[in-house]
Image (cartoon, rainbow, N blue to C red):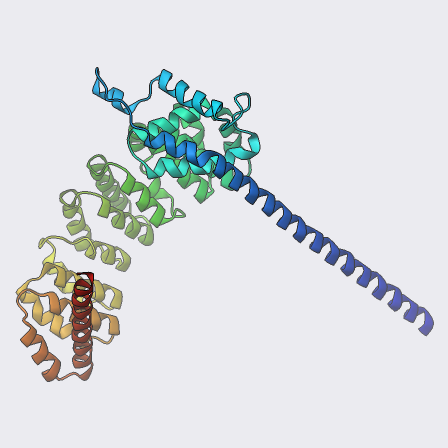
Length: 398
């Protein structure tokens, strides 16, 4: 019986060792395969860059003859111009006229094309669009759009946005409503580029419903849009969201987006929310945007808030508004239990118009609270060091 158990153990150990050996070999082969594939992709990308960078840059920097008829012609290449440019590259051997852009080169080419498109303005964009149409990229870009590769799908979405491809609007609109936050956000951005008016009218409110979108990317998209055109819709959306009492964090995000709108458009709404809301994150977002004295009474009340984050924003707001009556509140805030509140209160005191350097120095020596004296001394020292470094830099630059 012992011999049978021993043989079984040996057999089991042998098969286990063999299995692990096979798995290890397969992992090593897979690792070398990935490395080989990475090298192939890198060489292909470098080849595409070498082949296309010079022609693309040349297209964007060639001077356009001044229009003689209509001003709007200055922003468009004629069909003859596009044909001449394309024929020049064919004659120079830049690409094969039968198959101008092989399938495997398309993602790398589109990456360069999109990079240039978002780095330039005016007629250069139209030249890049003209070349893309001449290369018949739309069909293969649609296949990328419908594929499974996330990177290629985003590249296709961005390409259609830069091309302002109206025929792709409906398909990209569907992607904007998918659950994937990355795909949907890139699609939302492309919709604005393809048809700004329709997107603003029908799909602008998506930003209030999508809690999974990156606030930084949403703000970047809003900054790309015309401030004059989005200010009122954005303020209206924030107001409607406040009425619906949406989740606190999302409400705070929406308020923070108002920084891209005109101050005159959002100031009344900020004052209203500040006076009616009791949610800490919402109050903090509003305090960052207070630009007038309309809510000064409410701001002063919030200096007594239980949350140090709120008190921090209050002292920064009081310092920004710069009223003499608030100097006493800032001095009192130097006794706050939280270090950051004391630090920001000291920084705010230094920029108050009515407070002189002598008064600051006197406070730093005679305040009864040791923590208040220490924080004032620290801020004074930092300010002097900053001034010294700026002076030294200006002298060295001369």
